[in-house]
Amino acid sequence: MQFNEMMAVSKIYHTLFKRHGPQGWWPIFDKQQQRCVYHLNAPRNNDDVLEICLGALLTQNTAWTNVEKALQQLHKQKLIGIKAILAAEHEQLAAAIRSAGYFNQKAARLKIFADFLTKNTISRLQKKETTELRKQLLAVKGIGQETADSMLVYAFNKPSFVVDAYTKRIFARLGFCKEDVEYHELQSMIAKQLPKDINIYKEYHALIVEHAKVCCQKKTSRNDCIFLNK
DNA sequence: CGCCAGGGCCTCA
DNA sequence: TGAGGCCATGGC
Image (spheres, rainbow, N blue to C red):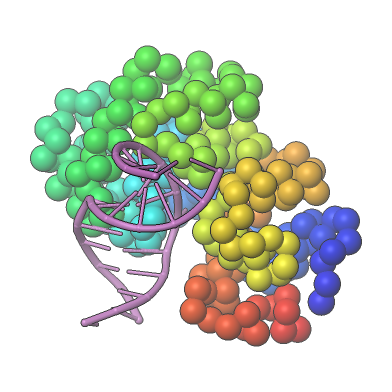
């Protein structure tokens, strides 16, 4: 199967959608069920916005299952809150997010981000233009390009396509780029071929993650890919 | 046991 | 701007 023609990126999206169905990202912790669930039109409120941003920081180079446990602890200890995070001792915060790995580094990043939100309220940030908000997020220590884009798309509803290791792997295996392609290079290549629709941005990245998990893992042969092995 | 997981920062050429 | 070290848990 070849995808060298224009609109190939859109075709891949539709293929993934048919295969895996709507994903409804971002997962948000549900206190009743004690696990992460999906909501239509998330985030529903500022608490959701904060939790999504914390999750984006916690999931850096880490399996989501470990992040979910950390979020559970944060809720249990009533640490999902800007003031609560700033007031908490480093040791308490680090212990709560222990399961997410890099807990000392991430505890510090949660505090830095909470401090950022006291100086720039969520409602103010939501009113900003995508590129301006992206630049502002990238200036925060602990927020790189992927984390910034995850926050933009899933917390702030701004169309800035998320590129991660899975995105690079899948598009590299399909022959669009090298595995170590520059972030911006792959992002612009994809965005140029997509309508600037926030819902497509949300679903596309979620579908890429789902697809990578079920049939495009690092060690699995490219022959297992549904695109290359019809 | 080793590898991998929804990265990012710092240092040193 | 590129390469390498560092951060750390839990699942398989």
